Image 1 (tube, rainbow, N blue to C red):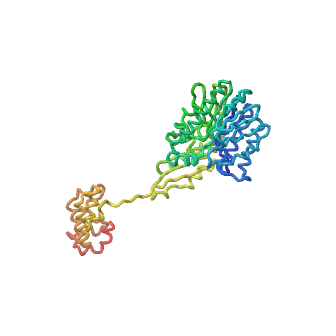
Image 2 (image 1 turned 45 degrees about the vertical axis):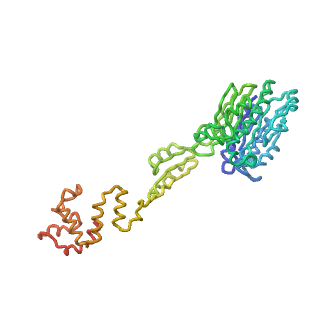
Image 3 (image 1 turned 180 degrees about the vertical axis):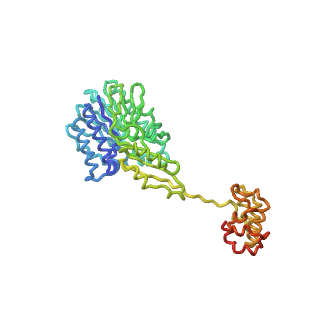
Length: 457
């Protein structure tokens, strides 16, 4: 039996072009390859849609197209993406074949092109007896998204986060006992669910590990299904054990920047005790993400723009707050005029200023300066001397002292400056005619007109 497994279509106004291009291709490919059944394992929509929304009409058209060629099963996905009741109308999209909406925990048999669901979570002994009398083509164990709020009401909010996996594992084990009996009778058994497998990898390369995920691989294989079809994670991946398979097809299209791997659907080949799955890539849009740890490198961006073509490009950078104006966003936009889309994201690093610990406890300016020097590993003595000089001396006296110190220690001059003994005016900005005065020294009063220039220097 060939089963076309689609997931995470995410039809919505913002995703309409990408979703419909990719799902239309996938549906046509599945029909062309003569798939026997179509399975959509949740998140057909991205959020609540109005009845007149073009995205809802486009999705309904593709479901009707599939139903003309094969039976269709649609599973309830995440409630935030598919509010309860969203899928009910798609049951009316059936054509030559039916569309079954799996919005409760149950088992569903496909017999003579029609669906027969169990009254409870699994087929009872009497229902199973009737099934085996005229064996169906396949039995699907459907486990839609579980309402964690209902679980929390029963076991408490704290326990619900970690006990959900145990509750689902108990159900899968119970379904496994029924599925093993079906498989022994030569009937294909398939699982369908929507959630996170502990240890799986997201489309951004992040490993999902924790105590609050719905499934473990052990629990999924304990369900006794030949193949277990999952939704929710947007990266295609699969696990095999004893010729049986658990797999995600990933999202039908590329909806976020930085997603890894091909996008597509899985074409399964399922027989009792054996399953394989082939990823069929869809024409998803290509996205390029460029990140800089600092301001953007315009030369590198130009090289990327020259080869980007009609891809969707995201440029990210982080920069200090005082340098944010250095990034020319207009120039970046001009580089990527040929791209299908450009998204610029900047992270501004704020300037962080912290007070010296304990400085407010000091009662004098000298004490505060000494405290700052101690915390900054600075020799406090010369700093205190300068502070006292500024506090007690006048401008003329300070100028004379500075000139005397320079004259006494010529080696202390900064390399590249003229010797202050030969050209004292060159250091302070004094006119040349004064530096060659025949007088042996200038009186302090003669420098009074230079006060402003001296301290500016």
